Length: 275
Image 1 (cartoon, rainbow, N blue to C red):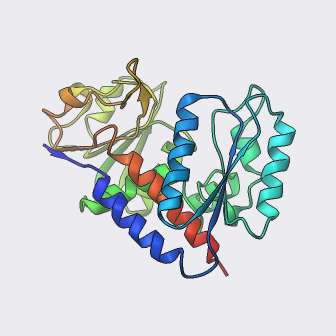
Image 2: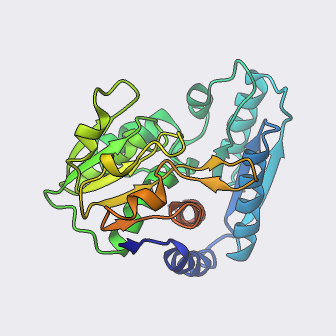
């Protein structure tokens, strides 16, 4: 079994981004935070550190875990209108009563570097230019990096979020894969997933995918990032058990995650150079 790590690909993307960041005005990313969630805050800090490494300015706009939805929306609108800001993202989770999907509509699609605005998702579904969600784009980038042929292949995506499942299904369709999307109400999940030549797990349920869910030799991409009691991360796939069946498998951590952050920054650099 081949382990599909994202380290080398992420490094190559960062190098490309650093070069693009010098082609015009210094790219500036604004991250709006309204949470005290440890995992969310860790991710925000990792974005800021990675941004500094490629020459992108990163502003953390901390509104506090009790911020009202109106204030979050006003902040996103203000940042979208700021000519010195090129990328805007809204970190989740959000305070009770705040809808990430509704608030994301306040982000200018030209600055929507994580593809959260429904307009961005609509353009993606229609095959029009848009920034895709970075995690969905990272899955595609990994498949390309390891030269996984998608033409006519059977692909199954487990998860239907607007962050991964739905946009990824469209990206796979654009590459001429035959795509099935599964979710929490799919009957006999293993019967469906075991038909996949390319299987993507994006549910947020640790260890959901075991060997019975995987066809021999399948390429398995694990998007899950579930916290463990010891402070680590584990995926949606039971790595050790599935490793004996799959032909290729991404680890958690070290697979999709590093590529996601690298692509988020590349989107920001490219947003800064839009005409």
